[in-house]
Length: 202
Image 1 (cartoon, rainbow, N blue to C red):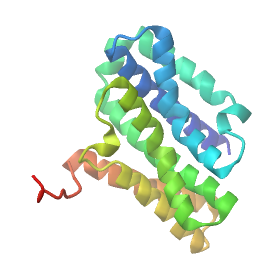
Image 2: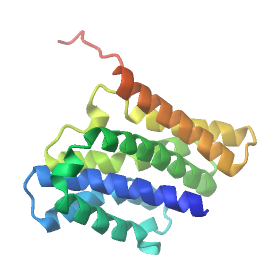
Image 3: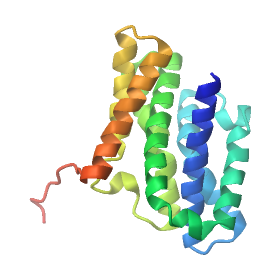
């Protein structure tokens, strides 16, 4: 649980940092930066918990808010240096995406026991916060670009449900599923993999 909490905190911090950097690019003040940073950090999990009708995770545990504040301060104070490490942030975001999606699927399976709903809400946990962040910041959302992104969240969530159905232990199923999601996202980053488009209406 200690390792899981650390990695979950890492994912929250990285997602918040991505939001803060996006807001700084738009010349927002520090309050605006904090608001935009919150969106990827808690947005997907908030939607998931509301749909599941369970207590929203950051209301029960304010760690996410404090991590977002820390990420905002880091981005504000060291924006040029953080921006120059965009490749590192991209990889950290890939890990956060896979982790959030699988944790979301795991929580949904515990509440509903339905693999389809778990895949849907796992994907929601991974991508919705970033989607809202990009829309508000005026960027084209990752999830609507050609590159592999949401597909990785779907794959990770589906892998967790499969492993759990095969009787694998909770932690083992979780880490194997995170590996699946991260590997697919990594393949998209390294080789520029894209999903096919329908060009017949062009």
